Image (cartoon, rainbow, N blue to C red):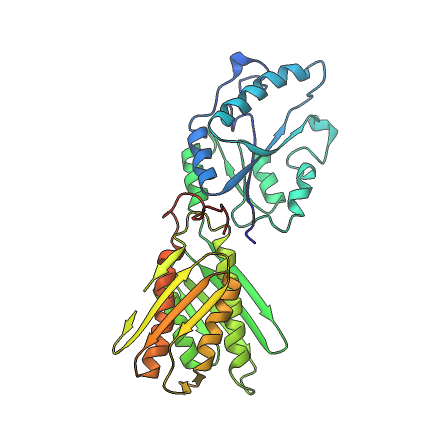
Length: 356
C-alpha cells in the first residue's frame, strides 16, 4: 500500500500574514500569505495532505479569549475550503513559552501519532513554517523543513522545491541465501552500478535501469555455489520493492508503458503500474541458458519484479537468437517503464479508483 505524504503547516506568518503584535485576533488583521492558495492546490494535486500545527500563546485566557481566535480561524478555513483545500487535522497549542509544554513547537507532543504511523511517507512529508522553531520541529520529526517569509522562500518556490524532491528509495534484503542492497533514484539516469556475481545478469539489470532512465546501485552476495535461482529471484524482489517505495502514492505518474525489436528478435512489452501484480510471457527461448543464466529464470525474474513493484508485465517474444531474445526482454521492460514511471504526465492518480 502507498504511504501518506503529509505537510505539517504553521498558521500565523505561513498561511496568514502575522501582524506586528504577533496575534491574528481580529478580522482587520487577517491577510492570506501571497501565493498560498495556488501553492497548496499544486501540492494537493500531487497527492499531499495537510495538517495545521500552530502555537497560540495563552489562547483561552483573558489576554487572548477563545472567541478572538475563532473568528479569523473559521474565515481562514472557509476561504481555503472554498478552493478545495482542507486539513486532515488542526493542532493548536495554547501554552506559553515558560510552560515548557511538550506539545509546543518545536516539541512533537501533538504529533506523536504521526511519528508512530508506519504509513507516513518520510521521504516526501515536510514541515512548513516561518520561524526557526518550525525548522527545529522538522528536525525533531526527522523531516524536511521549509521556511516561508523574509528569512525563507515564497510559497511558489517552496511548492516547487517539494514537488521536485527526487523519488528515491533504499532497500536491504537479507536471507539465509542472499544479502542484497538496492538504491534507486527515479529522477536521475546515473549512476548505474550492479554486482550480482553473474556477469550476464548484471548486464541485463543495467539494461532495465538505462532504458527506464533511473539510477540503480545493486549489490548481491548470493549462494551461487548452489545455482543462480536465489540470486535472480531475490534481486527482482528487492528491486521491485525499491521502485515501489520510490513511487510512493503513484500520483502523477504515466502508469502505462509500451514497446522492442532486438535485431531479428522481437519483444513486445507492456507495463501497467496498476498496483496489482501480474506477469504473462508468450514465447520461448531456443536455448536453456545464456551467459550463465538459465532462461527459465527470465520469467521468474519478471514475475518476482511484478510481485513487489505491484505492476502488470506482459511480454510477447519471437525470434531465434536466445541472447537477443533475453536482452530484448530486459531492454523492453526498461523502455516500457520509462513513460510509466515519468511524473507530471497526469493530474492526480491515473485511475478512476483514486488509488493505485
